[in-house]
Amino acid sequence: MRLLDIGADFPFPATKASARDCGNKSAAGITTLLVKIAFLLAMFDNISKFLVFLETADFHAMKKERQQSKYDLAVHEEQAAYGRRFQFLEFFAGGGMARAGLARNWESVWANDFCEDKALVYQCNWGVKEMRVGDVANVQLDSLPDADMAWGSFPCQDLSLAGDQSGIGSRLDDDKERTRSGTFWPFWRLVSQKHPPLVVLENVVGALTSNDGADLRAITGALCADGYRFGALVMDAQAWVPQSRPRLFIVCVKQTSTIMPNK
Ligand SMILES: C[S@@+](CC[C@H](N)C(=O)[O-])C[C@H]1O[C@@H](n2cnc3c(N)ncnc32)[C@H](O)[C@@H]1O
Image (cartoon, rainbow, N blue to C red; front, side, top):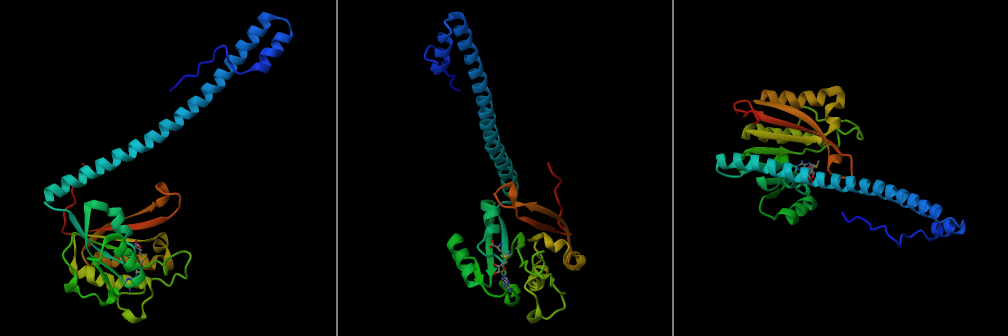
């Protein structure tokens, strides 16, 4: 921090002049001194606010760096013990934002979306190799590579508070009759048979309440029936970006997998 030198050229000519006009040198001196003190106090108030601002900015940057490196370290440790990067299947991949979030610690080995434009965006972002364009209902089980996790950001239109809440229907419905959010079922048919150790479902918070909870009961019932235990959390992107975007994440672990306690 550079301290200001408030000396003879102290920039308050008007104050100096008005004190001199009184013809009283000591009064002028005291007035100048008081003005200097007032100026210093004002400066220090602003400087201290500025320093607090800088400290806060620094603090956030450092905290982020610390969290990232702590997280990276934990993941690297686990992967070293594991002998390779974790691999995942990316259902309803869109432009690949799940892949962006999982970052370099996870390797996408297969991705699917039925929208050609979105698949093109995905391929521009990540390359052409993993993306398979087509309806999830037509994906063959034996075309799926082995992976540690399946990620499913299935469509939200029929669960969203802003939509008509048509819901996801049931496992037994005909695929041709399904709502858009009902594509959860062909996705789940594949995932439950592939049975990876981890599955993550991502959707809007409306999925918690749509149809008085019937959709959530259907989803969690399927998870239990097919050998997964799970926990759910809601995170709002506004903690990181200037937009409120609360999202539900259901993290599922195969019942036969061991969950290591937090260190
Ligand atoms: C909620 S968005 C997921 C967005 C994605 N997380 C991203 O980063 O862009 C759902 C995606 O599912 C795709 N989708 C919808 N119905 C599908 C279907 N029957 N088969 C495959 N993909 C489908 C949509 O094109 C859309 O990209």
